[in-house]
Every structure is written in C-alpha cells, then in structure tokens.
Length: 282
Length: 293
Image (cartoon, rainbow over all chains, first blue to last red; front, side):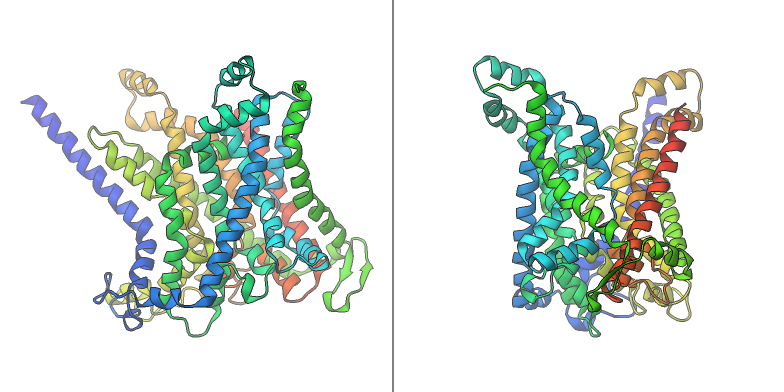
C-alpha cells in the first residue's frame, strides 16, 4: 500500500516535470514554428486577426516562387560553395594542427593556443574595415577567394580548438602501436587516427559549415554584385524592401536553416560533445 | 623520416599559424595604423594625425551613447542567459525512470534556435513583433492592449526587443553547456548530503551551484566577448534606430566606415570597442581568479 502511494507521487512529479518541460520548449520553439507556419500559407493569410496558428489553407506557393527565382538559386549555390570551401580548408589545416597539439609537446605550444583564443576576441566589425581596403586593392573584392579568405579568420581558430579536444580523447597508445608496427607518423595519422576520430572531424566540419553559412557581416560588406550574393545577404536585402511578402521570406528562411537542422540531428551526439570541448576546455 | 617531437610539433601547427597570422594579425595591424590617419575614402588622401582620432571620438556624445547601449545590452543579455540557462538546465536535468528518451529528445530540439542564422532569426522577430504581427494581435485579442505597440520603432521598446531576440537565439548554447556541467557532478555527493539531512535547497546551493559556478563564469566571459560586438541581429531588425536607441559600438563603427566613409575614424572606434571589451574580459578574469583563491 505504501509503495503504491509512493509510486503515484513519482507519477505526479513526472507529469509536472513533463508538462513544464513541454511548456518551456514550446516557448523556445514558438518563433521557429511561426516561421514554418507562415512559410506554408498564401499571402492573404499572413496578417489575420486573431492570428491563425495553423493556416486554414496550406500551400507551397511561396516555396515554388522562391525556387523559381534565379537570384535565390544563385545565392544558394554561392553559399554552399563558399561555406564548403571554407570548411574544407579549415578542417584540413586545423586537423593537422589539432593532431599536433594533442600528440607533441613543443615550446610555444601554450602561447600558440592563447594566440588562437585571442584572435576570437577581435570584433568582426574591426576586421571588416582593413579587409575592405585590402580586398579592394588586391582585386579580391566581390570574389569567392576574398570571401573564403575573410571567413577563415573566425573558422580557423574555432575549428582547431574543437579538433584539439577530439584528438586529445584518442589514446596515445594507438599511435604508438602503429609506429612500432612500422607505420610513419603521417601514415599513422591517416590510417589510424583519422578513421577513429572521423565522427569528431565530421562534427567539427559541420560546426565550421554552420558558422560560415550563417555569417552575415562579411558577406554583406565584401560582395556587391548579384552574382556573388550570399543567402544571408539576400534575406537582409528582402528585409529592407518596402513591401515584403512575409511568406516568401519565411520560405527562404526554412530553406536556409533546415539543411543545418537536419545535419545537426544526424550528428547530435558529437555536436554537443564538440560544443563543450571547444568552448570550455581551454 | 623521423623528427624530434619539438620540430614535429611545430611542423603540424605551422600551416595553421601562418594562415592565422595572414588572415587576422596582418589586418589587425593595418587597422591600428589606419586609426592614426584621417582617411575620408572619396578623397583618397591619408593624412597622419597621430592620436587625434582618439581624442576626437572620446569627446563625442554619440560614442558614449553607443557605449552605454552596448553595456546595457551586454549586461542584460548575460544576466538572462545565465539565469534562464541555469534554470532550464536544472529542469532538463531531472532524472525519472522511463523518461530518458523523452529527455534526450528535449535537449536535442532545444538547440534549434542556436542553429538558425542571425539573418533568419532577425526576420522571424520582425514578423512576430510587427505592429500587426503575432504578439500585438494576441495581446489585443485578449484585451491586454488597446492599440498596437510599435515594438521596434517606439522609443521605449526597441532595445529590450532586440535583447530578447539575442537572448532567445543564444540561450540553447548556455543551456547545453550548463547542463553538461551539472551532469558531471558526482551523484554520490547528493546521496551523502541527503543522508546528512541536507534539504533540496541546501543541496542546490552547496553542491550544484558551487560545482557549476566556474562554468557560469567562463560562459559569462564568452558572452561578454560575443554580445559586446553583436552586429547582425541589431543591424537587421532596427538598424541601430530609432534615433540611435539601439546603436551599439559595432553598428556605430560600421556606419562611420560604410555610410560616412570615414575609415580612419571608424578604425579608431573599432579599436576602442576592442579595447573596452578586452578591459571587461580582464576585469572578469581577475574577479574569477580572486574567487577561486
């Protein structure tokens, strides 16, 4: 009898906990839900009083319109290309460095880590000014190369710090075993360490891709022609228009953020670990 | 070929080091030089004026106004991030048999706002806080409001509204990190404490809070660095307006450079922003080191 009442108390606690969690999460996700809800309605139903949470008529009209807009498709390709290039370069350079950080003791190592951390403290807007002049002078203004180069300022240190955390978690014995078996250092890295740490590398790549994909200020200042416009700048330009079709804009938003959200769900486990390793274990 | 560890270590970090110096340190040095010049872009002439830019900027009311906007923004945002982050992390941390899967789902989907681009979240906010958007129509149809509030254009609400946007967007990051810190607390501590007769509140104060405080301090520092130089959310929602009410130092610098085209002055403003954020970070580190002693 006593056990039963104890059980029901825990059940009530469970229900309260579940309910409060759901309320909190609903509040946090409400704006995201609102975005999706507006993206699937026609232009007539955007501002109704009181607002309809779920549109009466669900239509994909906005998505069709957006996907037929060559400017948007171009911006999508630009964003994919630049973000992918930045990711590849960052992961390659930071992977080697991260491996070195976790495996070797060398003079100046800590100084270098502090240097990497301190570069992350530079306000982006401070770098934009000299970069604008440099890119103008070197002819890299409004080119992919210029964008990729400037994006590296914030992805490189970030990526290196995350990867250092991942490599540090792989036991040294693995390398040693490979070295004893006659593998070279480079061979040990590519044959043993890289496959083992692949999930971490993928998570770091996703992280880097995310920051590059979401970057706004650099994309805004360092491009001018419609051919080099990035997705975030397209959204920014739409916001400045006098007559905005909110459903179109939200459809763009959905297309911009859903690839990342799906990628995140697939790699969730590593992502959170990378987040904590990169940010806290300094 | 075998190298000594020292050489091998250097060889691995060399490419990254060279790249980093090229892409960050070189432009940084350049901007420090630029700050010493009068450089109005259309004129194409640069005159060396020493520290006159600094003297001039530190005397303008506009700069100090932006400074106070930055401080208010930063302080408010950090406070809410840490308090809400801790609160929600504690809520999510509850352990119930049979609900582990639900918990995992919760902590996965709570991250979504953090994944969304600044431009996207700014545009969502513009829709929600539009004079005829969801917030106003909801408040009006429940008769809490007579007339719509112009959230982003009035003279009282814009700053709190963009702060709310920033708090919302980055909150998941704080929740996740604090949650990870809470989960690393050994369970035995709580068991021992409850055997000794400590209540839930004392357990929270003496175990949870004291374990989590270093993480909170680090997060506070990270948040100082990030929110001090926040640009895109404010730029895309209010553009610094109305009448400069939300114009923080980053926006001020941006406008001086790319609207007034005064690159020398803008460089100086940017440098001052950087130095102020450094001062805050150093004070922060000093305080947390003292605490640990």
